[in-house]
Image (cartoon, rainbow, N blue to C red; front, side, top):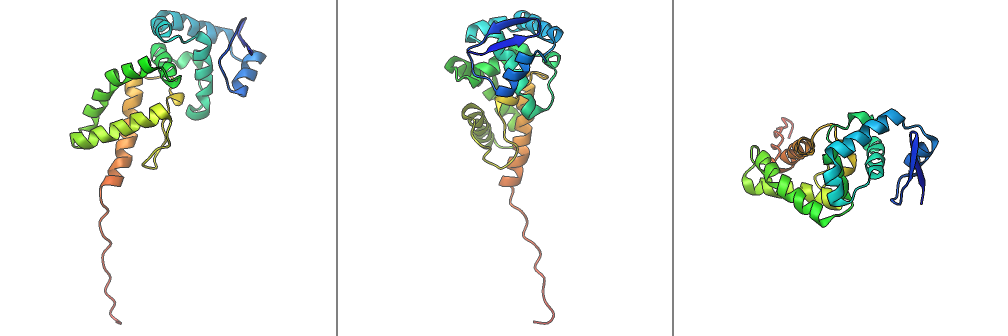
Length: 191
């Protein structure tokens, strides 16, 4: 069980972390003020969600630290939607109740968003594929940007983040479903 030092205090952590995050926290490179501000937000905004799904504060910090590999440098103070990040962590841990709530909250909304570009049946297929890729961490089927809840930083609401990812998916699907025009035939004068 690694000891994770977060600024001035320390606590034991039984979850797996990346070695870089573990080394960074042990060396105290995460500022105490930033962690204190995040801790306040955790208890003010996300404690109900954390209690419901059993997500510890340390898991939130490590998740945010690890997102920098996919989302670039992360400032712990830039996390404005702590409850959404905690919810995403619960989904990443495979909580059936979290995924049930995920479907209830977001599936219809995303399908409605996708129907602006596609018929409802096609929109439903695209959204369900995207959710399956999120849930089972599958590679992106259409060859575009892969998506994962591991890259969610809480800078925007989870609903807005998913909408943005769906926009990428719709643009990728648009090129896949729209047949390309045939190239013009060139007649040779010498044949």
